[in-house]
Length: 245
Image (cartoon, rainbow, N blue to C red; front, side, top):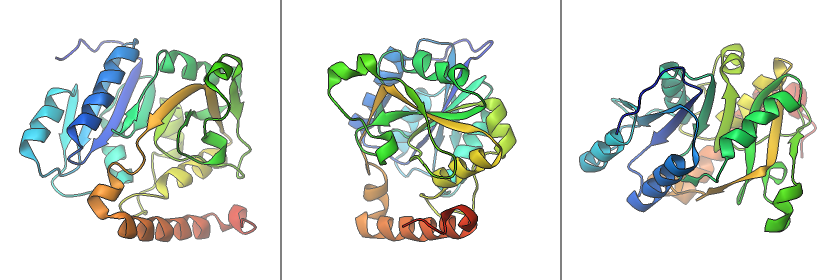
């Protein structure tokens, strides 16, 4: 069902590659239930091979883009971003579940700290700076926290930007093959523009890690790609990463 899209506050950009139906259904259900602002859902079908599933994906999108060949994550996200028109842009995966009030809470971070370029939630599987800690009741005393520039990075599963920030960094760098590295690169591009990254510990997003990568590429090939892209990232930003362990 298409919704009227005037004065859009949020654009949600997501990639799909023949997702498992229960995973995709869960993602769509949580978005519809817990995203209460005026938003558009842009789904980029990255050369999926299941026509029946692609038709279902298209039916759930406000804007549907199908690639003519398999593109890298960065290329695919950039296609969706170019098609977006919201004041805020969420770039995410299709294997997540969002919680109640996620957007209302996360966007507060842009006003709580100076020069914020990106805000991310905590998750069940991520880097230390972005991993959920403590017990459920502690969520009430959790708060957004700013990361240390050129010292801390995040994984690009669920990234909220203001449009001006994406314009400044000129979107995602496309030299990273398939997947992995483009999210770390985005962190350093943001820092390089004098902007900050905030992790909102009040917002917990469930991520079914590897739901796409392991299925499409296999675990061994996926790890090889990640290592190669990480090496490329380290070399590109060697000024800041030369002392990394």
